[in-house]
Image (cartoon, rainbow, N blue to C red; front, top):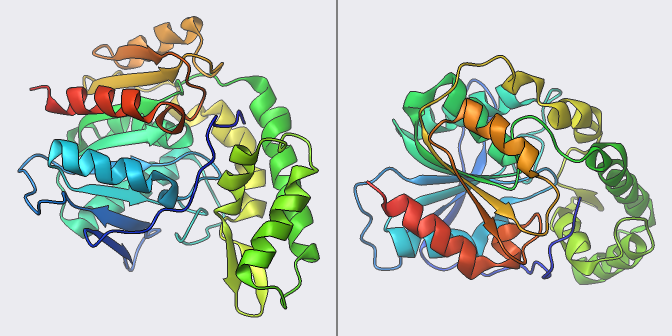
Amino acid sequence: MFAPTKPISSACFSSKQRETSVSSSKGVPLAYTLYEPDDGESCKAPPVIFLDAILGVRSSWSEISQAIANQTGRNVYAVDARNHGDSPHAPDMDYALMAADVELFMRDHGLPRAAFIGHSMGGRTVMRLALKTPSLVERMVVVDVGPSSVPAIVGNYFLPQQLDAMDAVLPRLSPDLSFDEAYREADRILAGRPTLENPSMRSLLLANLWRNGDRYDWKMNVEVVRRSIGTLVRAEDLKGLTSSDVDALFICGGLSPYVPSAEHGAIRRLFPKARIVSVEGAGHWVHRDKPAAFLSCVKDFMAQQ
């Protein structure tokens, strides 16, 4: 994984954000936070659903989600994928399953259509949904990922190293530590591990730390995510599908290796209406590295008729 250039900090929830989760008798219910425009006047356009990257939690989209709600007038749902954040743990994980989880989320909330913003793994989940059930997708923004490839080093080295580091932390966190003390100790341990020298990358992982009864734990299902890396990197469940005419914006980081020009052809074969833009000076976490440029792109795209 390539670290964002700015640390990710915890943000306080405003009165317009409601922290909750869906319950359902079938499928995997996704935990979510609803962001409403600060003026309380939601427009009639479909809401936005944010889907985050692997290892991510929905709270990392807090400021961006509220800004999108305010600037577009749409309600915004930031959700945790299965095995991530506050969503349930499940034994299997691929894009077909995660897209089905989103369909369940929409049914449970009475959402016939939605606009989507998906980062990395979340972007591929949105692609799967748009290719299999395009009637649910009003439009989509995919952030720094294509349908067919990611740098090999991500699946072969970066992600395994980061998951190994998370495994190494928990046995060294005494339950007698306060949460702040445990957080600092976990950060110190992670800082000594390969690929985690950058504090911004560590903050992404540390957003998963929580107090689970009498011990510290990770919200993320590390074991299943580790087992699923190959499936998520290869994205076999995006192949062999008919193209979609969903309006699409692909926002790429100008400093990121995730979407080389060779990947543009694969994008346009599946999404003929796709527009591909590059944000100068941004890495893989475009929305964190260059939030103003990211918000401008999203606002303009959401306003298009």
